[in-house]
Length: 340
Image 1 (cartoon, one colour):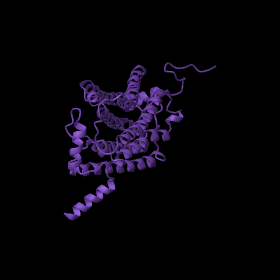
Image 2 (cartoon, rainbow, N blue to C red; image 1 turned 30 degrees about the vertical axis):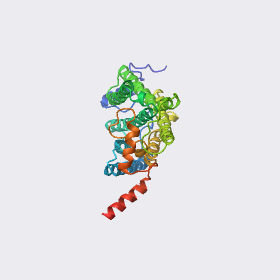
Image 3 (cartoon, rainbow, N blue to C red; image 1 turned 120 degrees about the vertical axis):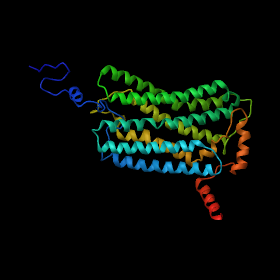
Image 4 (cartoon, rainbow, N blue to C red; image 1 turned 60 degrees about the horizontal axis):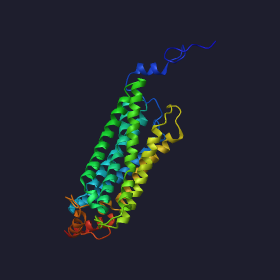
């Protein structure tokens, strides 16, 4: 005769996993399979250390660009934003290493997951800003119209709201075992990751709208280099970020037990769709001198400000039609310091 099942679902004489967790008290370890799984010292520590060094290089590169521009009174805050993003990714990899060393510490798992999920939003915002500038360049009256301004402001506010939702739902999920509450938290997280995937995709239709609509007014150009190169850089980075966001959203919809993760939850997938894509985007922007290509004059607020201010910036800052390489600019700064 088979043993009767207990009221909590376990067999008599055998410990019930839920009851064991309740005895331990919150915060509880993750109940389902996560993208990347629980880190281990043999795999995640060396891999995270490599990514940590690469993001440190990206942070140094963007801060160097920001400081060089600041000395020339060339304001481009987005270089500082990517510096901040790189520093956040350094912290995320540090916490993943710590989590690998203390895999049973749920509080460390909470911090590691928050840092891993929150940072990429900055790259989405950067691409939205660039898409907005392209739209204003090709369609100045439409791009500077009040409805479009309000729409972009609403998008940026929605990003902040989604960030708060993801953090609150993620943290609260570690402090409850109630099935109904966990389902509601899961619904919130699914909405947030889906919205962020759409947000990552938005620069593509915005750019297509700017290029395909019949235009009667001239392009209000900005920055250095051709508009074609700006568009290609934006489309390339947007496709990469959209793939990463869509992959994370798709895996979030599929529930698997922690002991039986799917292939798309493997550690290789975690590092590829997160940190590898982000590094490619960061270095693409930095090495193509996005601080020169996507720069707009300070105080731009109406049609025509981009092109009128761009000529003044060229005279003050002294850059040519094509943006200089970072190595060349560092050499120029070194020669100036030696001359002084």
